[in-house]
Length: 156
Image (cartoon, rainbow, N blue to C red; front, side, top):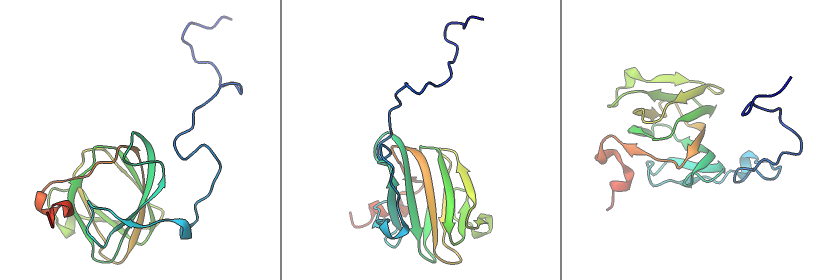
């Protein structure tokens, strides 16, 4: 039996696969090694940690976001598709163009949320601090629906 041109071949051990940035060697990242930093597009109390990759560059990345009780990320969108995993706390997210607490859904630790790119949404740490892990293909983008909600426009 002959193979047609262009047909898929089973992977062979001799094939060389290129590694993604930060994935060329085995390593682990423990919770105490996560480096939480302010992020200009977030309210001042919210922190971001880059876990794998380089979010500002094209390619896969994984970040974590830690939001303290009461913090809100007003309606915004990202150009990239995203997969959120709730690590701790309760993650409140709503798909809307304005903040309406009655339209937010609560997701417990372990929940996975698929968010297509360019979908307006908002977050609220309603019941306490939460940590989410986000995996996506960079570059990361964040655009608020209203310029007044964008922390990057404060103190300019």
